[in-house]
Length: 124
Image 1 (cartoon, one colour):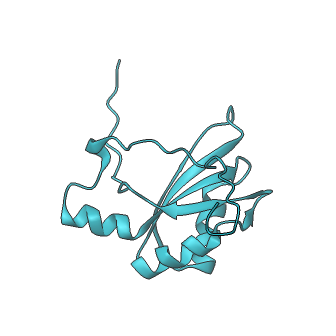
Image 2: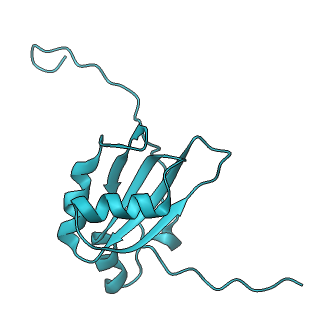
C-alpha cells in the first residue's frame, strides 16, 4: 500500500546487471560520447543497419556512428547509436515503443561509449 492505493511490483523488462567497470567511460571525451549515445534493444532481426540509421536520422538527427549487434540465432538484435549532438540522443529516448520492422524498440541512455573496433589480426 502506498497511502490508500495498492501497489503492484512487476519484474523489470530489461536486464539489471552491473556493467563491467572497464567498459565505463574512462575520459571526459568518453563521458561526452556517452551523452550522445543510446542503447536500443528489441530490434527485429530483419531490420538492417541502414534501416536503423535512417529511422533515427529521420526522427532525431545526424547519426555519427552505429553499431548493430546480434545474429540470426537470436530473435532480436541490439544497437548502440551515437549521434552528432546530445540533443538528438535525448530525442531518441522518446522513440521507445515505436515499431521498427515488426517490433516495438526500447531505447535507453548508453552507459558505455561506442569505442572504435580494434583491427582484427590474421591468425594464419
